[in-house]
Image (cartoon, rainbow, N blue to C red):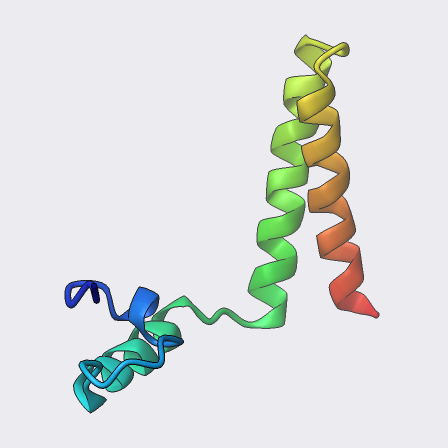
Length: 80
């Protein structure tokens, strides 16, 4: 069954019930979530700093360490 309230879930479905308005809603919603490279880098480094702060309180928390590395990697990867 198609969820008519969430066009993001329906966009990739091959179903005759999907309307063109859902595709248009999806494309408009996608534009809202797009951010530029500089904003993406800033967000990545801000999150990396946040996880680094959490690590200073609990150095043994492997999930914070992993998230720090992932955020840092994401920010650096955009430069390349």
